Length: 479
Ligand code: BYC
Image (cartoon, rainbow, N blue to C red; front, side, top):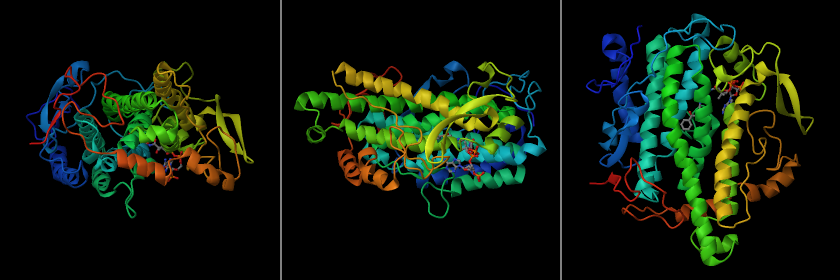
């Protein structure tokens, strides 16, 4: 298949910059998937939002300024399509056994199954997140937030399109079957759940949503960056463009939490107390509860990097399917022949840091990059506390706290990193993770605010609005 690059053609039923009109078979296959997608969006996309006019951005090209197009759109009419970053015709494979060979434009037969699996796992998360967030519109704290939710939802929908395109274009009949399955598994479904743990957890309220977009979308950033290094060029180019969208999702999370912290500090000043009960009575979310939500969402997201020592990851790396974060900027042999990487492990009930072959530790290395990156937002939230003279500081829990995947799965580790007896951990669980009471408290704060210029009492307004508009602009019109 030849892949051309041009600006996005919106006169087509499926907007694209991959020359779809020149490949009738593929075009027909995708056009027959499209109604199923729309049906899925109507059934499991944002609840009751069909008639709303939403101020959304739509990509008009994959250039840096390609995002400049904002306008009111009814979401089911959003022009979901297929956009790949510009090809680099001389691109060479940057790591693994095929280092230095030309990047692949087709899937090598021997790597078909693992590559398909990676694409399916990535694709599965996208509709999952839309499903997880589908009821949030009903309790939005402001029109600005509602618009951001919908923007993220349509972009996750487009990310699904991106993976479905790859499956249809390069994997024949099994690709088409996998594309169908992406609409058949559902988040939290007892019989057909989504593939990865975090994508079956509920996102019942806006605090969870900001935490999800900060911590779980950040897994997306690192996984997409690793896949953007892939020797399979169409996957690499798709992920490069997806990464530009991912940045906005993490921005929504980071600034969302920052605004919650800001409001909490204001209420602490109003009620002249830092006592949790007084803060809650003042209508804000107390810092201890925020820390519990950080603990939960961080630990669930840290699980998404897989096993610390992973032969799957080593195979993906050797084969050139999935690289490391910013692979080409790393200063080593890009084959990891003899190199070591320090890995946290649980051995005989104790946490140790041991050098292991770097090849088997590729998942853990990506997790290390993620942890470093996650800390940055925490520092910014702490700066808000500092600016209000509040002594409390948010922290990321230990990487082994509350884990279900990897060497510490089933081991009772405190947020500070001490291994303790299970009974003690269970007794303290409510100090570290949201309790039913905490969740009910947060749930009770969630009341819908949709008047321009108004905002829920538990969160501060944003510093600025979207696309140069004021924050109190009417970003969603209900008609
Ligand atoms: N839950 O050797 P391991 C995003 C399984 S987020 C359940 O470590 P591997 C987004 C694993 O599948 C980015 N199962 O495996 C964010 C394996 O199963 P098998 C999503 C898990 O393959 C917000 C076994 O345990 N993209 O885009 O190296 C909103 C052994 O593990 C989990 C990707 O993940 C888990 N958490 O690592 C919207 C990229 N972890 O072989 C979107 C594609 C591991 O025993 N995926 N397992 O049956 C991958 O690269 C890899 O599949 C993983 C797992 C890194 C996830």
